[in-house]
Every structure is written in C-alpha cells, then in structure tokens.
Image (tube, rainbow, N blue to C red):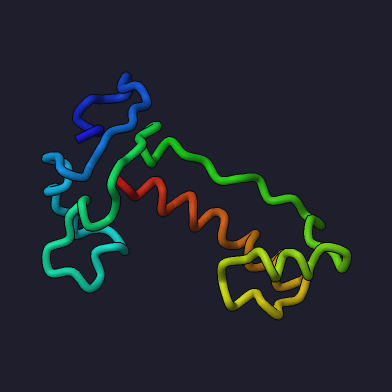
Amino acid sequence: VMASLGKEAAPVGFDVADSPFAKLKADNTVYCAGYDNFTLGAFCDGYIWTKPFEEYETVTFVDGFYTDDNIELARIKTPSPLYRSASVEYFDKSLREDLPKTLNRFRELK
C-alpha cells in the first residue's frame, strides 16, 4: 500500500484492527510461519510507516566497543541465546559481519 504512494509519502500511523488493513495477506514475511493465510491483522493492531525499507540504514559498527568491562551487560541485553556466554571476540566478529547482511535484508523488502 505504502509503496504505491511513491517516495513522497509522509510518515503515517494507522489502526489495523477492525479495518480493511487487517485483511491484507502476506506470504513473504518471517511472521507468516505457522499460518495458512497470514494477514496483517494477525501481526498487529496498528502500524507506523516511516519510510520504505530499502531506505533504512544499519548502525556503524564501532571496533573495540565490546570490552571485558561491558561484556557481561552485553550478554544480558542480547535477545539471542547464542551470545549469552559469548566472548568479546565473538561479539565483535559476528556482529560486524551481521550488519551488512541486515542492511541487505532491508533492501530486499518491499
């Protein structure tokens, strides 16, 4: 829907629940796993659109950000169980490598 408005579309928020948007079907999202007919209404009650996915940018990785002084907090804050006992070196290497992949995933979304 938003792509049809073109690059001049302004950021907007709208209700999904009890609206025609709730019936929008999607089969190209990770959230559709387990659904025969996934719809936007199964995912959210409202939606905020700021800009096309391909215009998003990832953060800039800062070498040396993870240290012995902050690694425990990083382990606690990460949503991934893979990092719960990870070393400083593992955090640095894997997150540095993941940033370009994340950016590519944004660019592939429509």
